[in-house]
Length: 228
Image 1 (cartoon, rainbow, N blue to C red):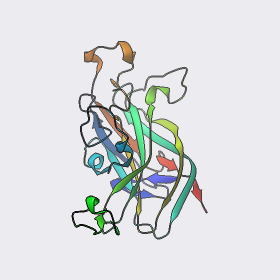
Image 2 (cartoon, rainbow, N blue to C red):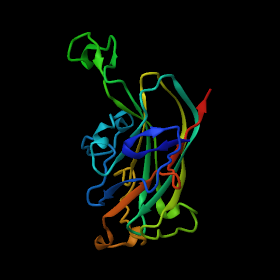
Image 3 (cartoon, rainbow, N blue to C red):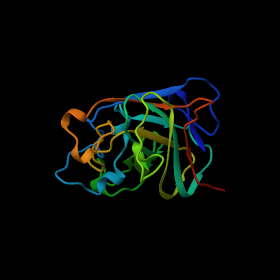
């Protein structure tokens, strides 16, 4: 496990503090989009889009490691293990695993049409590459056949698998985790109220305060399949 920490840190060390959490307000009227650009229809390009557009939003939490001193290779299933409390009775949880490039990174010898300088290097400094992402509708956190409402402001576990990954985070890069509660329109909007979403009214959609806990008692983490 790699642990979410206070102040947006991400570390292999388990937190030792008390009552530590990060929070954001999820508003179904302003969902987090899957891409920065506006498209008439969904495209495949979102899978390579720079995720900095999401990092800038107040309803997206980001946690990242220090600069890696060695390569870190993953092979297998990624598991999100979140300890969360919400102000309403339902919410979605999106976890994204991201490779953050060094600030001075450039791809050498790129094609001329990809660079401002014909035949020159293509700048990729600070690029946030989406390695893997997945969404879990919170009501199904314990069972897909028996959905459960959240008890407002009670700490509960939301644990789910992301699709398998095969990726090396190179030395000099950083590992980032983003957490959010919408990914529109890849997933439909959750009213954040424990109702039948397909029959609910506009009035059922409400803002929710989402807390992701990261202390000794409630240590949110991401289990990574690290290969030696």
